[in-house]
Length: 226
Image (cartoon, rainbow, N blue to C red; front, side, top):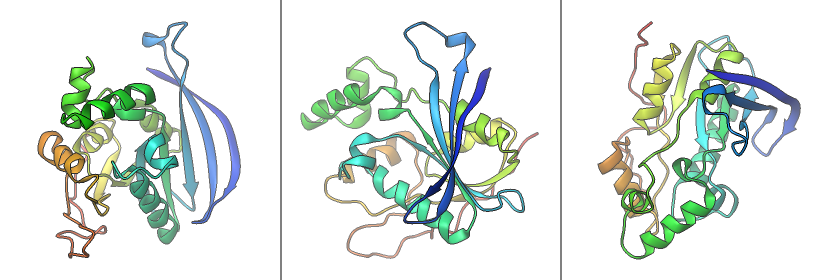
């Protein structure tokens, strides 16, 4: 069980909208060690999130993509898509979780990239380094949603594991909103691997402007099992 601690709640103007920015720490007593600091996460909150199910994006930190705009992944564009959609809707929550490289950390992710330069895909590279395919869990963002008293969401994700985790927590996912963004020659293999090996949903958007098969507003309705 994670013990959630609110660190700060501040006014946060951005190019998209004027958010509230909440900083949280979560401590899992079962995994507490002296060398393992509390996990941290941010929540960017906009508008009335209780009048109707808000748009929610659970976004894992990606320094190479979010900060340096790497073309090897879709993270930067997904982050900006989510912020733009939330701003357009006038309400929503972006949960920014510090789980770099599907949980292996920045330096290990760079080692994984080095293996990918030798021909391994992202999953093969992580396994070659002795890591699981995906070390993330979503306990902290789910605890934040509970703290915010959010009972149902329109979840923006292509990752079925995020959907499963939210539903398993008892929070209803009323809509799956696409997080698909255009691919580039640098990210095409990475994106294909996520679709083919991790089962990620895809709308097949390409840089030549082809029409997506499913719009960002379309999604599968998923019922919660209480």
